[in-house]
Image 1 (cartoon, rainbow, N blue to C red):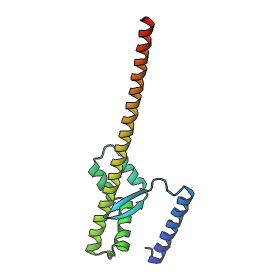
Image 2: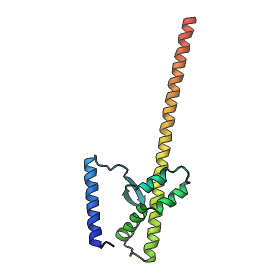
Image 3: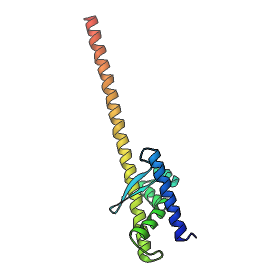
Image 4: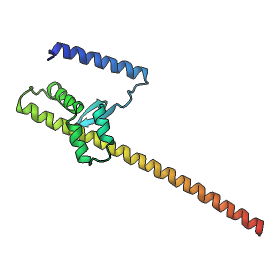
Length: 152
């Protein structure tokens, strides 16, 4: 198991790499999502498991939340937040409850974002469909008017 110094150094290196990517990519990292966990905004980049779960059509939203909650991403984020931000001690009941609560909130937040994205995509598609239909209707009116003028 890593000691705290190694873990801290790895986290510093990870953050430095992300900062470099952000600078290079115009201030954002592909796939990065901000989630609100009880008033704390956390930036996460969903891992492959989370992305697969979010896109799986055969699962209910509640099953997706459960799978995301149990994912390495949610568990790692929750453990980090519980020890570093909330000050709980690893192995205590308070720590376990905190990890449970934070991972659940993270999973729900990610799913809420997914539902918002779906809603926005649906609204955009409906707007596109409406505009296409309006264009078709306009062309039909113009054809009808043209044919009425021709046949008089």
